[in-house]
Image (cartoon, rainbow, N blue to C red; front, top):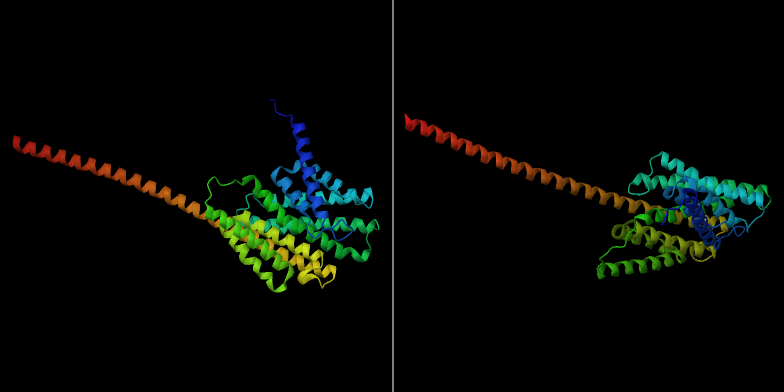
Amino acid sequence: MRPLPPAARWCLIVLGVTVCYFVAGQIGIQWAIVREQISPLWPAAGVALAVPMLLGPRFWPGIFLGALLTNIALGPSLGTVLVISAGNTIGPMLAYAVMRRLGFRNQLDRLPDAVLLVVAGAIGGTAVSAALGTGVLILDGALGPGDFWATALVWWTGDAMGVLTITPLLLLAPRFRLPKQVSLIRWGEAAALALFAVGTAILASTTTSKLFLVFPVLVWAALRFRQAGALLCSLCVCTFTIFAAIRGLGPYGSYELTTRMLHVQAYDATVGLTALALSTIVLQRDRATAEIADAWRQITEMVDLISARQSLRSAMTQREDAETQAACSSRKRSR
C-alpha cells in the first residue's frame, strides 16, 4: 500500500483535529451559562493547546475550523464568529510558542514543565482568547459593556480549566500503555480509588465542610497511579463541582453567578494544580531514583571489572615472582 502524499495526509489530520475540537466544543456547550456559548469548563481549549504540542503548529487550521463549526450556529453574526474562532486559535498557538521557547517538554516529567503549562497555557493563552471573544461580542451588541468583566472571567476560567484538565491527559495519551500483568490487588486498588474519587467529588460539590476530602484522594492517586490517576481524579472533581455550581447546588448555590463561578474556579484550579504538580513531582522522583539505580549498576560493573583485572594482574605478578625465584635458585645450584 502506497503512503499518502504529504498534502493528503495534512488534510486528513486537519480534518481529524476539526472533528475532535467540534466534539469537545459540543460537550462544553452543554454547560454554557452565558449566551449558551460560554462555559465554565471548555474542553476544546485543552484540545486546542494539545494539537500543536503533539502534531505540530502547521495543523492550526483544524483548530480554527473546529471553533468555526462550534460557534457558527450560536452567532450572533458571521464576522463575530470569525473573530471568536480566530481568538480560539491565536490563544493556544501563542501559548505553545512561549512554552516551546522556554523549553517545555511534552513528557511533563519536570516541575518547570507543569508550571509552564499552568502559567503560559492555562492562564496566558486563554486570557487572549477570552478578551478577544468577549470584546467582539460587546462590539457586536450581543453583550452590554457592563458585562465585559463577568463574561470574560467565565470565558477565561472555563478555557483555563479545559487546559488544566484535558491537555495533560492528551499529552499523556501517546505514552500510555496498559500493563501486561496486573495483580488482582492492583485492580482492586484502582476500583477503590475510582469509587472514592467519585464519592468525594459528589460530597465536595454538595457540602462545604467536605471540600477538603478530595485532596487525600489526589495524593493517593498521584503516589500509586502517577499522572494518569491524579489527572483523571482531578477531571472527575472539577466536572462534578461545575455541574453542581451551574445548577445552584451545594455550597455555591446561594451566590450570584459571577461570585459563584469565582469560588468554583478557584477551588477547581487548586484541585487541578495540586494533581498536576504532585503527580509531576512523583514522576520526577521516580526518574531520579531510576537514574541513581542505573548509575549504581554501572559503578558496580566497573568495580567488578577493575577487581577482575586486579586479580589477574596479581596472579601474573605472583607467577613472575615465582619464575624469578625459581631462576635464582637454579643459578645458585649451578654455581
